[in-house]
Image (cartoon, rainbow, N blue to C red; front, top):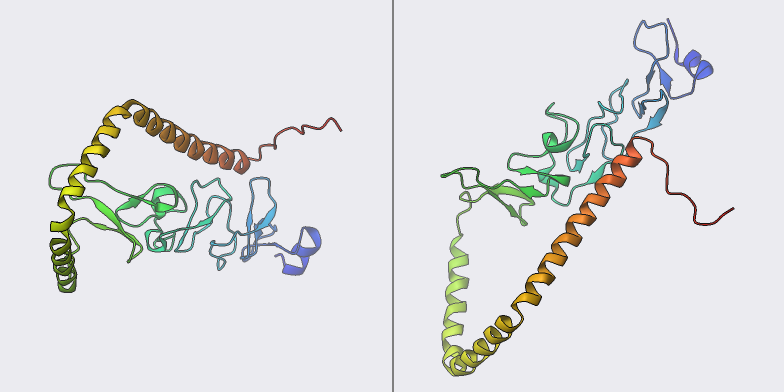
Length: 220
């Protein structure tokens, strides 16, 4: 039977063994065992109460996200309640640790309705999570605010209707004249956004499998 002192002497202070085992083949609760057999400190956002954790079995705490089981990158979620973590035994990475109705990187994408009658989900920034599109009822005070705004708009609207009409005509004419340019600009922004997201995932996956960094631009 091994002891903590023996494991620390023969390996490192972060190695230990399961009860009754003859070898120091696991890591203490604050560390995980990497694919090359080293005990490394668990990233922030990983549960630290379990001995013998490996890279693939790291349990993610609520409010945090990990893209893949082989990734060491754990990030805080912008919408904490969308990220339920591994506490429910539902997985250690990806969509499996997202709440119902959410998916994607950091669980930031709300699921759309997949068939007729399925309302889908939307992000409720007040609650900080994805909720059913038909689950929210408008509170009474909201109606009062809307009525007040409508009354104010009607009072001042009569004085601005002619000017507003001219403004709309000018805007429509400008949009019509520049329609092709606006379409190209929209496509450019879309391509840039998708490219940026792809590069982030490629770099993360490259690092997670131990890839080397880019070569130096200086010859020494």
